[in-house]
Length: 250
Length: 262
Image (cartoon, rainbow over all chains, first blue to last red; front, side, top):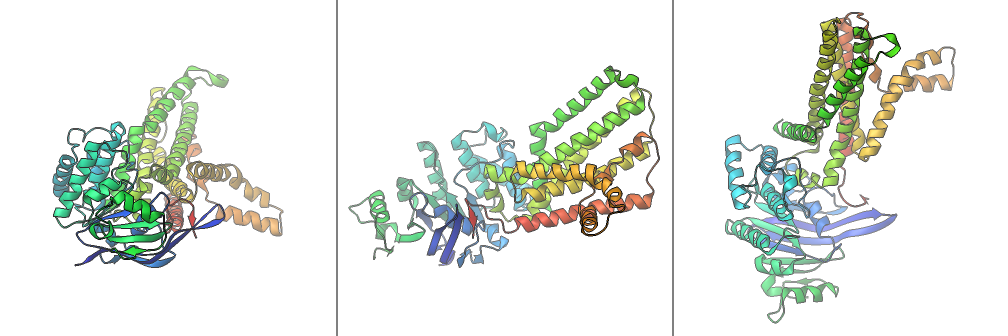
């Protein structure tokens, strides 16, 4: 099985108000192709920093990160990924359709194929009727869905989602779950960070829990979480203690 | 190239929908009308006076537009958070900078064409005459200067907030119009370190005042010789390239995260 994400001994440090903050400290993680991988952790634990390293926004101080076999610094690595940030803020002056056209243009998609893909995606995220409305008029859920559509424009092999269901209602969450399930069925890899443990439990094969910039646990959900416990109970227990637990063994 | 054009088209869409250019056009028309209605210094509606003030306002508005538009392109992307999905695509930072510059410069060029045309039409309507070729040459030279100015605004904004970048741009423009032309006079009879410093400032600072051909158009002094015209355009192109290169240096390894990476 090929590896979609390979992070090795990654460390990132930031300076904030004269202090050095270790955002990530020796993080090692790998995600197999075709997995739906949940990246969990409390606020400020380093989830978003790890994602920003994967996308080449932040250069690591130590270690290396590769996506789909390419170093994250190489723009070619971004040809096959899609990304939805935590706050799916986008250009309010564009319409939904124009945003998708712009996203497709950045992938140099042929015009006829792009047109067809835009219609497919608008249909998939239930925004066909609002496609020609300015994004400024979209609700929070609609913003998240158009953000997801732009992340999927290139039919990515790896989809990185940062808090994809944040601020969405139950229906919106269900729609996102359906999209993730459809991607999994097509052998795509989904890497997503979330606070919503019930969502993670429903869609993820594997998880990693990060705490204070270090991986506290990682492995298959079925192996990590005892039968008598929910993921939420396991998560709380894990973040309240130190040490790394891999595949059920400390 | 397609990625650069995609970014440029998005800049166009934003600016057309924000309606700032229309507001400035309406302001220019209103100010021209107001100036024609009052008889300042007894000049009445002489065509030269209208041309002078009209071109001055057209230049002023295009300068303001250029600084405003170019300085906010990158900070706005970061503020809105749209920089993340944008750079997560296979778009290099050079392509982003070029797209932003091309979008800003091309729309300002169109706006300045409309401003010049409006002034020319008003002058014609009041029976004035001017040399179309000199006006066209003045417009092209003006565009060359605006290209360099747009690149400078983008260069400042790679490492500054919108407000700081715009302020810095205005300081450089004011210096080049008010201070730089006086330096040769100040250098007469001056020796030593002060002369060296002033000379360095004179030669290192961008001379945006060179791209202003208003006096030549208004007083009908005729066209600039083609050699000088070509040198001027080349100077504009070199300044633009230099500022875009500085932009790239400032942006190529910029981290997008709270705080600065060590």
